[in-house]
Length: 307
Ligand SMILES: [Zn+2]
Image (cartoon, rainbow, N blue to C red; front, side, top):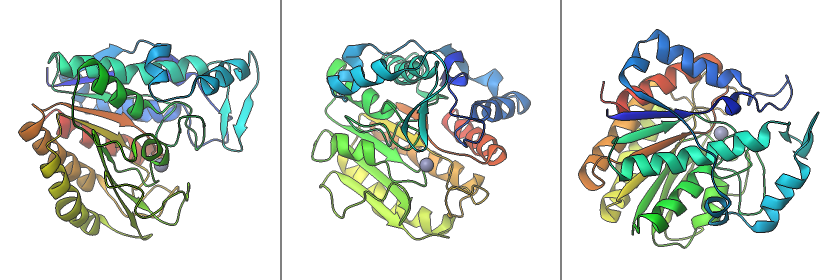
């Protein structure tokens, strides 16, 4: 089949308190839409395997991995920062969320599937080599990119991040690495407020003002991302798919709607078809208005699956 859908039951058991927007119900919202729309019948489902330590250590520092293991609670929560907490299932969830990306790299590189969506949490793009933050513990997309570069000896991996927040952990991991081209837009100023201009030549990360709508963002994709991506000729395209730029999502103030997510995904599919034998792996990042998240993820996967 065209598209692989990778998840794991542990991703549903990690939770950070019933007040927290990064909640297990996010995965239910996605699953509900995929089932109700019939789309689930046209994609392959797979259960993620946990990442190995070797997989994590390509991106994260050994002392940080030891810190996470040391502080994983057997009951209650361990607070890493005010909005990032571990419960007794977080460690397993984080490890399989990272492992989903490894499994997806194997699938698209061995060409069992052209592309994959990792429906996982905790998300990853704020996690740095030695730091959990912003609901993220392990940088799932960075771990997948590092694995693809080493295991399959790729020379060029593109990372596209359309979450409303700046993917600061991914940027920190790959800034200055010529094997990776990262393209993003994000609302600015907004959490995590780590953006510096320009951080490195391989970072095409564009701050946008609050209330920017789809037409403005599509222009950035066509006129800024795409020329750089075309010149880079990626062999694999990874997506940090955050849907918190949706107009109904209170976490940010962008004005994206489903048709914008479909359009951006179609542009990425066309690029990957041209340069990367169609290989795309998309990772769930943000998206906190459950209804908008379900609808947006559905159109994103529909575009990946060309349905
Ligand atoms: Zn976000």
